[in-house]
Image 1 (cartoon, rainbow, N blue to C red):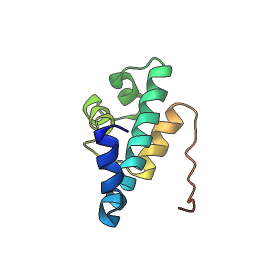
Image 2: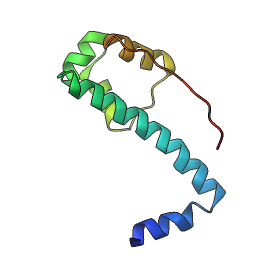
Image 3: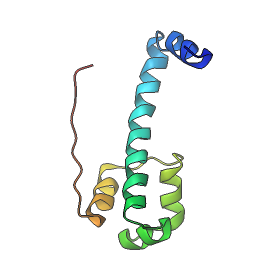
Length: 92
């Protein structure tokens, strides 16, 4: 096991750290899916922005994780690709 993984395992034993890690993991997963969707559709950030009525800068901030997006905006992006957003609450 790498030093990083070992350190991470230790940190995840701290409930506050684990909660924050889990929150960030969800955001990372959403961003990763949005980037993949945009790339597989061969759209630039500017093209996606134009499709949904926003700016390239907003798409960039979403993709680099410096901005949080709400459900309405996430649905707007999904609709631009003829997709829908699903939400599940799972047991931990």
